[in-house]
Length: 203
Image (cartoon, rainbow, N blue to C red):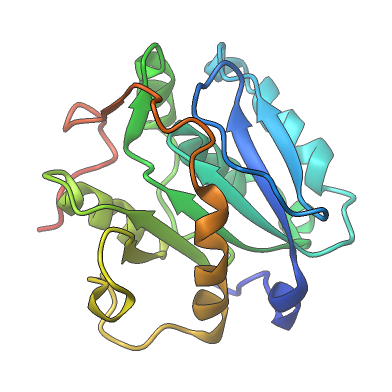
């Protein structure tokens, strides 16, 4: 599959995709950053996807999408189903802890799990701590064509689902990970377990 991104990833603006009502909020410190807050309360009606369409379909400035938790699942669903012309500005994405589900978000995660699981049409990083569910996170990264990075380890010791060195685009995306630091470190979250259908361990 041809990727949408190009070398403009190096000058792309961060676009934070968050979920309405989520207590996890990133520290948005960049003057060029923007934010899209998705209403996922009625996931099946797809209105949240229209929010992303409106934000990116006519955007000309290059962007890197930054998402956490269930917002990652929503972005991946949208990216795999939307017309490629809507994604021209998206140079890459950083998905942090996609298996973390905030309290009250389990129905959203269950709905999002039924989405497509093809490779994403742009470079992406899945960043997460190594937890008992790391095999599921690695499986998800494999399906999305993303590089997994352990954010709990020193850079030289990052485990990965890729044997080769990261691409230039993936190396550039690593610089965006810190932007997803918590604004509220006390946020209560749970980890989505094996009940999420699309997150099976690799065979």
